Each structure stands twice: as structure tokens, then as C-alpha cells.
Amino acid sequence: MEKALLSVRNLHKEFDRNTILKSIDLDVNKGEVIVIIGPSGCGKSTLLRCLNGLEEIQGGEICLDGKRLQKNAKDISSMRQKIGMVFQSYDLFPHKTILENILLAPIKVQKRTRAEAEAEALKFLEKVGLADRKDDYPRQLSGGQKQRIAIVRALIMHPVVLLLDEITAALDPEMVHEVLQVVLDLAKNGSTMLIVTHEMTFAKAIADRVLFLEHGEIVEESRDPKAFFEMPETERARQFLKSFEY
Amino acid sequence: MQNLGIDVLFKGTNSLRLLSGLWVAVRISLISVMISILLGLIVGVLMTSKNQILKVIFRIYLEIVRIMPQMVLLFIVYFGTTRVFGWNLDAELAAIFVFSFWGIAEMGDLVRGALISIPKIQYESAMALGMNGKQVYYHVILPQTIRRLIPLSINLITRMIKTTSLVMMIGIVEVLKAAQQIIEANRRSSPNAAFGVFAVVFLLYFLICWPISKLSVYLEKRWS
Image (tube, rainbow over all chains, first blue to last red; front, side):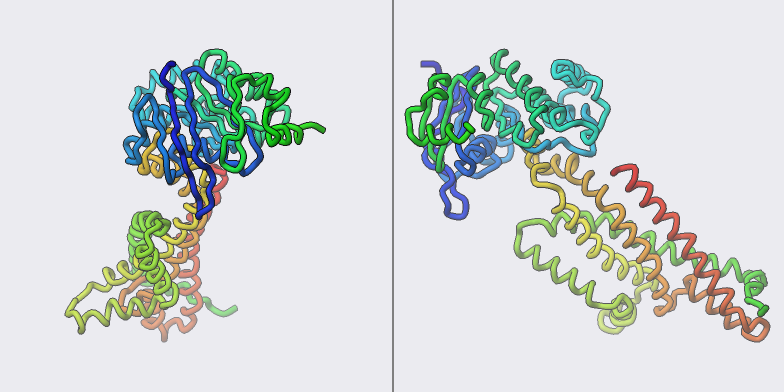
């Protein structure tokens, strides 16, 4: 079997003595799109945050490309460049223009030249249909547009894995589509992604694998999303999916 | 109508004396404000640190500054240190020290407040892009903090300028003291000078502080 790009072994996370995640094992292969679903508070966002080093873990290990992630600052920085993350809230830097938002990390962190990074940024902006907004400030953009920029800002770092943490949860319904379209295109082009979402139709359409998390554990894992969403094997997943029907 | 006594200022070098007094006040406050802003930024960042010892030290510092009247601080630094430590401090230096001591604490507290008002997600999304602590502060947090700080710190600056009138108590001839001297010297020839000259002093303070608060309104609008 092909060696996993990102592998998580026995990951354990506590917060104030409450166990948030217990013995999570997960292998993410190159080009795979994994969707993580589960009731709120189940630890799915925390899992993504652990993978990005935003949360300290109390046990287990995370390996990227076979290399175990350490806690020192240099390692964390290089890991974060390889593992891009987009958050639920539109987290653009409000004091910088769209273009500056995108260019900040490639120029300052990866020490790329402005000309080269800018050329790539413009290409990305073209792809998400926002090239004409490059000199605007984030406050001038809608939520959906901001979220598309946040995706571009993560992509320009050339991450090998992209973590998307409920990126449409704070959007108006009509803006959800434009953001998900961008994510779908990424999936088609072979990006490796871990997606936490409450958009079940979207999850079904994009997922290669579905993880159902509850109380910090992977309750069900399915490599056949269609079957999973039709009829999950576990009772808890069935209950959860039922809550989306009216 | 009564003579307002402004004519005194046109006698001899009186107006020049008043203006050089004003310059002394502006100089003391300018230097203190600059020191306060620079060191206040650092102190403010340190105030948000998780280190308990640092937190307690800065808490005590801030409380001392808040509780103690500026004049008492001035007296301690100028008169107090002379006998005990044998320091012969220049009065202006003592004034700058006290005003900076005050300004750094208040500025630090303003910076601390502005820093914690920046949403956590701003730190996280910057870190998620691989930035290290310094880069996160320098490129993402500080620029936003400074924008939030402008109106608050302008308030502090104008307060510092106004409070320089206290330094006449340690023998510095700033604008208020110069005005007093002019009035005293002309007591016989223009007994009404107290009104006119102090009114001019008021006007001078206004002319210094008003553009500063205008600037703050402008910057606030531009960056909002």
C-alpha cells in the first residue's frame, strides 16, 4: 500500500482535563479528499487545529511525509507552510488589500520575490473570479468573496494538504455555492484535503472518504460516501444524518 | 469696557518670553510622548504575556502611576533624589523622566487593551500561514493595534501636554510660569494683565492640542 502523506497515530487531546480527542488514527493519502462530519463539540475542528499545530496534543504523533512533527518553532512553521488551513470566520487581514493579504506569507515566510508571487496570485485570483478586486480591502468584499480569497491565500503557499474548517458555516446561503465550487475544482485537480463541513450534499459530492466523529472518537469511517449517506452502518451516524432532514 | 491687559505682551520681549516658555512645554511633552509611545508599545506587548511575574510587575507599575499624582512624582524625582542619592538632576530631565514614566505605563495599558481586542483568529490565521511570532506581530497584529490606538493615544498626548504646566513647580519656566512672571513684572502698569495673558496662554494650549485631535479624527476616518 502507498505510504500515507499525512498520518495520525493515537492522537490524544485534552483541554482542562476534558478529553476532546481520544486515540485518533488517520492516514491521508495523496490526492484524497476526506470529509469529517459530526455533531458540534465532537472534536472535528479541534482535530484540524491539532494537525496545524494550533492546539497542543497530549499524546500520539502526527507525521507528514513520514517525518514526525516536532514542537519547535522552526518545524511548526515549515509544517504549516505544507499544511494550509482556512477557517470558518473570514479571517483576512483587514488592514491589507486583497493582493497584500495573499502576498504577505509567500514574500515574508517563503522569501519568494514579489514579482513571481504576484504573478501567481493574479493567476489564482483569475481562477476564483476576483482578479478585479485585488486592490480592494477585505471590508469591501462579501463573505463568500472573502472566503475565496482566504483559500487563495492558503493555496499560494503550495500546501501539500489543505484543511478546511467549516468554511461555509458563517456564510449566507447564496454565497455557500460560490465557495464550494472553488473547493470542488481543487478536488478535481487532485488536491489533498481534509474538510469539516455541515453541508451534507456537498460532503457526499466531494468526499473520497467520510469520517463520522462523536465524543472525540471516529465512530464510523466509510470509503463509499454514497452508501454512507444512504445508509450509515452505525446507529449514531444514522441519528446524526437524520437531524438534517426536515 | 475694562482693559484686558493683552497689551502687556507687546511690551519689550514679553511675547517672545511667552513663546519660548511654550517651546519648553512642547519640548518636554514631545520628548516624553515619543519615549512613551516607543517603550509603551513594548510594555504593552509584555503586559499581554502569560508570564505571571511580568504581569504582576507591570500591574504594580501601572497602579503606582495611576494612584500617585504627577506632581508628587515630580517632587520625588527632582527634590527627593538630590539628597538621598546625591543626584543633581536637571529640572527638564527630571520632568521628562516623570512624564515618560507616566506615559509609558498608560500607553502600555492602552496597547495591552488594543492587543487583546484583536480577534484570536487573526493570530491563528497568520500562524497557519507559517509566520513566526515576530512576523505575526509585525505584519498582522501591530498594524491593526496601532490603528485602534490612535484615538486613545492622542487623548493621552494632549493630556500630557496640558499637564506640563506642573513642571513650573520644579522651577522650569514653561509657558504658564513665563505668563506669571510677565504678569508679576507689570502688576503696576497693567493690573488687568492676568486676564489677557492667561487667556493667551489658553489660546496657545488650544493651538497646540487642537491640530493633534484633528489629526486623530482624520486618521480614524481614513483607517476605519
